[in-house]
Image (cartoon, rainbow, N blue to C red):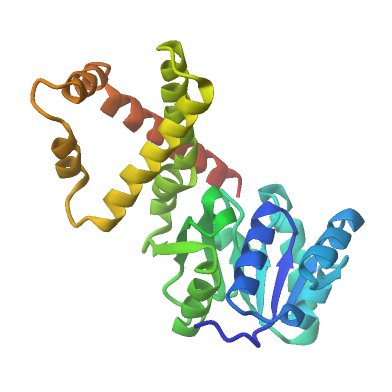
Length: 276
């Protein structure tokens, strides 16, 4: 369990930072051990009022305060932020664990800005982290201390399940599989809801039917030891309506469509890596 006395500073106070903050507080982390540095006075006032945590404008305050610094800013700001932090760390002779949740930014890119520090972990949480149901893909260099790995994992577990990849080249696949996938599921459910309404169902009945069915299917998959293929076969009775629907999906090359979509997502992450 994460030590509730560890000082954690966030650079940036957007939605994902707030989700992690809320998750940490829910787990019992002390509010006075959390700091957010954000340039917007509106953001600082909101965070102070809603979470009763310390807020500051200058990023350098994070270096003086924190045991762990979480970079929760847009990728194009990472370099600028890391330069500020590196200068402050150098001056204080204090080199913290840094966790980046910026999409498409390589670990070495951050490490280089931080004078080659090995204490850098990259984490990629997906949208359900906002309700503590996320999947967080994580990566670091083999030189990262095991205590830092454990601490980073414990922090991110405040908003969901964590998985580690050994090679950073696997992170695009994590983004395609987990980071982007909530949108795939939303799109599929949206299409089902639309089709149900077209078949005559009331919109409320259609949406409720789709959402509850999705929730039930996911719950079964999580609780069962059977493979997804086996679970699908159980509900697909020979010559029944489900078999007819599944055949239509297969005939429509759903497997290839999903594979192409996921590859497109991974390719985009690779493109972003070229920039950072």
